[in-house]
Image 1 (cartoon, rainbow, N blue to C red):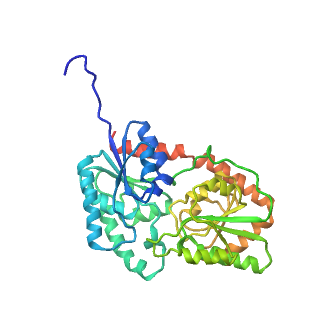
Image 2: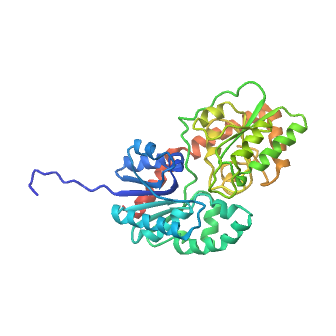
Image 3: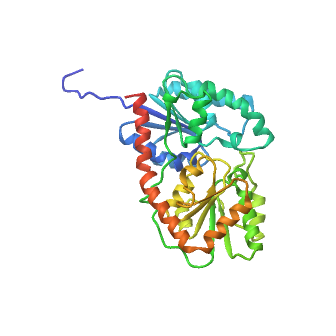
Length: 380
C-alpha cells in the first residue's frame, strides 16, 4: 500500500433476524438507526410481508427469509434453516440479533462462532395459551430453548424481570449472560400529550387481534357496560394474525363491528392520532414481553387498564400509572374501565403519572444505548 493511501477500517456487520418485517419497523428500527450511527453495517433478514421496500427505504439491506411462525412442516422449516445458514455464511456478520422463538432456534443453530444476541420477546402462543396444541408443544420448546438460547459468546436480552428470573433459575440461561432491557422504548418527542376529546368516553385496545391479548374479555366488558347503561365506546385497532392459532377471524371482527358491540378499525399506522381521540387504553393480555402499546399510551398521556401479568405489570404501577386487573376476568376489566370513565380527575392523574414514567424510564434513547452496550460487550 502506498503511503498516501488512506487506511479503510471494515465496518462491523450486524444482522437482525426476525419473523416479520412490520415488527422490525415497530420495535427495532430505532435500534438499527443507533447501531448504524455508531458504525455498524446493518442487514435486516425477515419475511417480506409488504414492508421490505420500507426497510430498504431507510437505507438497510433487506433479505427475505421464508419464515412461517405457525408452520410445523418439517421440509419448510428445514428450508428456512438452510436459508439462514446460507445468509450467515455469505454475510459473515460480527453480531447476529435474533428476535422471537424461531429466529432464536434456527439462528443459533446457524450462527457457529458468531456473537449472538437472543431476544425472546414475549413468549408467544406456546407459552401464553391454554390450547391443547400449546400445552403439547410447551415442554418440547422449553427443552430446545435450554440447548440454543445461550450459546457461547452470547447475550440473552429479556424485556421483563419475570421472564429473566424464570430462564435463569430453570437453567436455560447463564445469569452472567442475561440482560434486562425493558421493551422497545417510545419516542416521547413524536408522541405528545393532548387534551381529551369531547363526547362519550372511548376506550381503545391496540394489538394483533388475538384471544391471548384479551380480545374476548374486552368484547365481554363492552357488553356488560352497555347492558348496565354506560355510554362508553369500545374500539379495537389491529389486524388478525392467521399464522397464530389464537387469532380471531376477519369475519368475527366484522360481525362484532356491524352489531355495534365494538368498533373495529383494522390495522392502522396512525396509532398516535387514534390515541389522541381516546380517553382510556386497555390491554387485558394474558402475557407480554413488554407491550409497546402501553408505552405509547403513557407517552400520549392516556389512562391505562391492563392485566397483572408479566410485561404489563412492569409498565403499570397499580393505582399510580394505571389500573391492574386479573387476566381472563371480564367483570374486573369492565369495573376498572367504568371507574376511569366516571372519574375524569382520576383519569387525568393516572395519565400524567404515566407520561412522567414514559419520559424518565422508557425513552427510545435509553433502550438504544443499552442495546449498543450489549453489542460492544460481545464485540468491542
